[in-house]
Image (cartoon, rainbow, N blue to C red; front, side, top):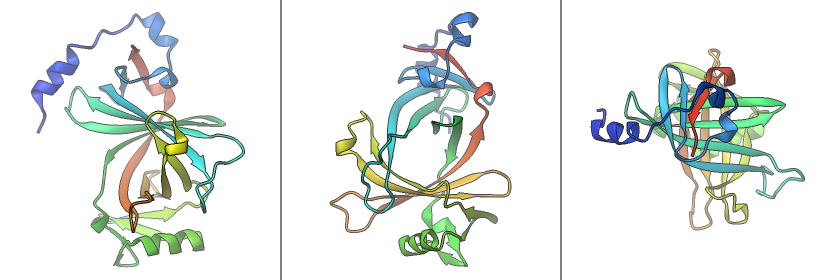
Length: 207
């Protein structure tokens, strides 16, 4: 159900910049309070977080820092929150996440997907996960480990592993395991994301 009051409150803060200023902006300029347009929708950036890629086995920092930036978005048209991630790997890459499958909806070889099965898939560097009839193949090259922080204070960042899977339709399924020291076993989350052409996205207001 669309929250009309929340939508109106956000719309009142929108003040679109002139076209010449918009043309000079990219997703790299977006901060909390900014507005974006893509996919025939307008979004307000609610918050910005960051992942620092680290070594898979021990979460130690690599020689060179590689960052992934995550924006929490609110859709003015749908009144829903979603997430957008961007990174620069030779070129700018952007993906949009709207669907968060429940872990019980994911299966591997007809079985519920457990943390141990995820670790086995990573060890073997291959495996398929099914979600609502769609099959996703494990991508070892795209899987990564990181430290999550809202402030780039990565020395206190939360360790996370991202197991990446991809369907034949170029849809990505990510299963994250969060490894906080106080947890006996990691929390798990799943996300379905779609690639966004950077040229199709406009930053229309910054703060």
